[in-house]
Image (cartoon, rainbow, N blue to C red):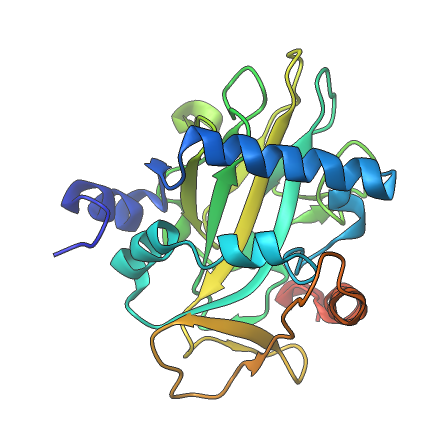
Amino acid sequence: MPKLLTDEQVDRYHTQGAIAPIKVIEAEEADDFRRKFEDLEQEIGCEAQSKFRIKAHLPFPWLTKLTRNSKILDAIEDLIGPDIVVWGSSFFTKKANDHRFVSWHQDSTYYGFDPAESITAWVAFSDSTRETGCVRIIPGSHEGDAVMKHVETFDPDNLLARGQTIEGVDENEVVDLELRAGEMSVHHNKTVHSSMPNPSNMPRIGYAIHICAPHVRQTQFEGATGTLVRGEDNFGHWAPDIEAKEHMDPECLAALDVAWERYRTSMKAPYEQ
């Protein structure tokens, strides 16, 4: 019997490759996360998503705590089982009246995971709707190849690092994963997804937690790190991540920079190799 999700939601994840919405934190707590996020951007003087890449939670106890939220982990356990590793996290934000977008892509393109089984828990710190440029998916696309052909555009308006784009996507069956603050969506790393610009007067602030089971391993470089947040690890593919002792922990900031450089330089899609 599922811990948090309904049987229908579990079935929808396995057939469509994503589910939403799932309430994981109260609206008041979501507002607190939003304030912390806005304070962080004021502190650093730039967008957090441009500075904290692939393991955004490492320097921040409040984000590390969110990666261990019991409702988030209960939902993930319903989908992948009781053994859970958080191997990364990312901010995905659009300001009010923001013309930037995320092109059609698969998360699995650059992960280099074997098997290609990772899951993203996308938590809304503010409402993420059609009007603000929510995540949208092509249902059932996770049943296809782990890596489809992507064109790297390096478009400055594309929030993806390389502007990686699947061309010719049939959008007739698009499903919008609309969320209110405090809700999350989950999607499989092979699910083709994107998001449109945000022409509204409200920002769209999302935080994506990257998760897998311990048997999944990184094949594109040695020394992959992650945090076992529930259950047991009987495989040893993930060395433990360092944990922040304070806000902007300097050791964690250094570890984050090392992790991003390793991912940035090492992760190539199989069709490039």
